[in-house]
Length: 548
Image (cartoon, rainbow, N blue to C red):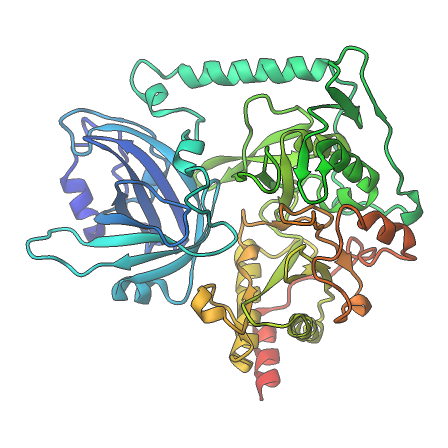
């Protein structure tokens, strides 16, 4: 009760619809960012810690520009129920104005969060609908007569960071992730604005759908689908629909506008060629993609232009891309999925260059069917060392009875994936992968780290286990990357993992040759293996034995 005394003292709950709330006993790691139009527009940044929401008012809002410091003034703790609050606080009440839920998700602290908070330096990873990657909250020295502590909210340098030349995410994605509305639409008398917009978007999508000959998305999940043989890879039929304009074509029944648009400048690779590439490898791609929640990287102008993250539906979205409501503690979370190759081609039409997937399917979102280790080499780490790291983790997993598979990421690193029969919770899988990763780093600290800070990674491999969080994602097998050369994340056999293998060597231009030459799919058995997460104590014993 004492934790929320200041919060309650400032509010008259007979006049405001804000939740009175209580301090919870649970120890979760949710976060929320609320856009708040009070005496002046600002963003309230809140992290769940010890049963309450630790809160900061960020005047300019969070920035994705690496290293940019945003002033964050700490305010009173809020109840967890406040994360779902969206509405208008009456005038003359504390914080009077309109509030929308701008972003929400989970956060993962590095080290002990209470110790970091007390010391005034929190480093953590966000997995929200808009914000991702690593961030820092750093407390500033208190000035004379300053009643509230000032902190700095800083985006770390990682794959999600942007430059000051990129678009501002606050302008790019201004609407609520809860209702899809703007502040004006939430304000009194304007509650129907968002509904009309959604209805108009739905009509537009339906109209577009009526002009295509796309087959209806399959309802059956492909997470355990049988793999067709490699020699069935073929080039899809491409045609100009009779009713289309001269600048559009159809691939797999999905209309592509501006098919000639170049997506990778160096290769001259066009939108039509990317769609045909995916259609040609559909038998390889779909078993790892269908009915898994997606995080998309959209680059409408191509890989060399501005890109942004998309996790929920947009106006004019083709119905071949599905929108589904997934239950979450605070209500319902919209997730995007595809059911067939038509959905993938529809993503290409929308400028999607990367498809990232959850480690779970729509069949069972609360129990992952895969775990993953992302090996991300820092500056000065040789490719040979990355291979050795992958083999070391594979060996530890084998000692615990888990078989694993490996894929290139289209970048400098590797992903290790272990299939699971869905039984363990996200919390259990995260704890297991964290314990194993920390054991590897503890045994060879000069080679490995579980810290994402760039200064800690030079000459070492960052073992990223945080991709095992609920709502976190990893690039899908056979997805392209928005990087020079049009590389493709590609499953490989353990025997292929040699210094001769280039980590970004498989591309849109070369992958078909690889697939047609393979005698066997290197991941053919991933859908048939029946294995469950070992008990935590088994992991601990194996780690101790390894370090002895």
